[in-house]
Length: 200
Ligand code: SAH
Image (cartoon, rainbow, N blue to C red; front, top):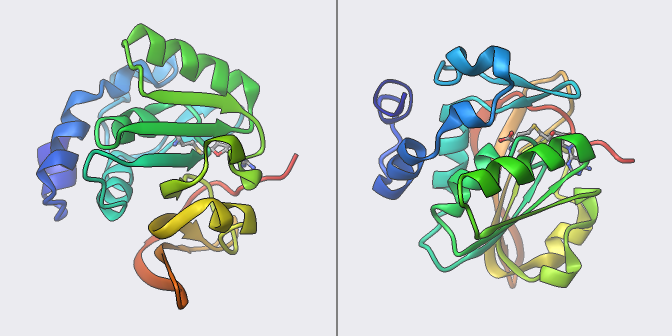
């Protein structure tokens, strides 16, 4: 998976490749999909949601420019897979998932793998996690027309947010937004297709 899908498509960050190689993706998918866990595609995780394609997780991880000391917020932590990958690259990861059922399963999987620096809770990620802010980096694993204002507030100056920008069912743009004193500085990275950020 790492060689053929991720390195072959241009991901060079050695720490990202190591993180992708070390997290057992089959533990995060539903039992009927275990045999497909390392295929080049998203897979269902229940509640109509999907675990992202491995390459996209790697692309987002690389775009976050994590060096190891960061506090990262993930909105839409779903199965916990991407959060586990980010957990290999940052100091502390905070994940919020709207669907309590998915969150409960993710908490159990991470505990069974002995992951201690990834903290998950169920809730509306639009609001961020004020008690743990500010964050050095924020990643959205669901698409939104723009970065929600509470998340911008909770991003530290100089930090980056990576998100699929756009509407559900349309082609979205994966963007990196840097918080500068002059305001947001945005780069378009890639075209993507994510499930939408929903409001409860
Ligand atoms: N990173 C996840 C991908 C899950 S798909 C993984 O590796 O498995 C995106 C997730 O965003 C879905 O589980 C969906 O329920 C969640 N989501 C949608 N709107 C949300 C919101 N407002 N707050 C938190 N999570 C949300």
